[in-house]
Image (cartoon, rainbow, N blue to C red):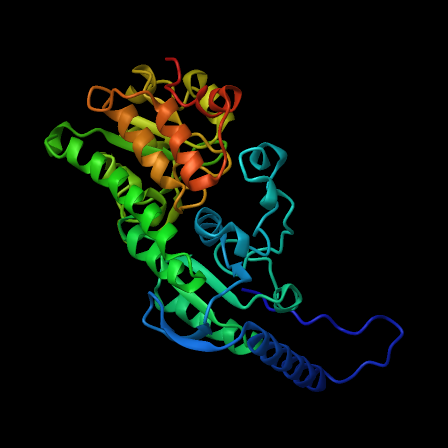
Length: 365
């Protein structure tokens, strides 16, 4: 993360670099103290990384550090959001509640391409910062550093899909919406359990080998075991991109794709999905020849990975149905409508359902 201090405007007397740093630190500490007082009484809270943090008795103005946290907060307590990590596009905004569409964008504190800075965070006056995803030491250190620099409590929540119930419970306690958290946790657990139960009888040697294609050329992927491809395993697939020491996202070569020759391909990119059957590199693969190339829906958030948050719940059910249509015969329209009402606070009309699902089938060979 890049933390920037904005220097005085042109024409004003400049101070030394050391003095600037001291003034910046003092200003941030003072503002952090003000925010703490405004937020009311504090209480101890142990986050998913085991950090003990003094948090407001009930957080009311929350800043999400990255996209997964933004999605989680939106599903549970949109009234506490003070902005978006990235401004929703017009297409995305149509699938969000009207009250949240116009919230300001402030950038991200964590993850790829972090763009927020301390000044931006302080200006928004949050009483709590949350991040959702990995709880590794790198992220814990980042949370400690930002908290020390701003005076704003910063907590980490586990972003793995199997810990959804626990994560909802922790956030529900922080914002005082425990009953809603229980409801969403129960529905999340039911969706995951349904998929696990139905595919449990499929032997390992009958489970499809799947490649996850990211980007316009399809040559970026998530390795096995990464949060980006977590739902492949849950949906009863083998990720052809074994870790091999790598973690997260990685770029692979065309030769590797040919060597893997997957049974099915999942992609986020519409252009890649449209052209894969005529691209010389891809058209000879068994997945393409069999028409088993699936484009994940992506409004207002990607169903597979973009971001790797709560939005993957509906993606898990969709992907399992694509891979095992005989085990999941129910139409996705009703499942999608219920999920969007319950988690995204919107009632989809027929046109919106068509927009979401029209390209969510297989590419023609």
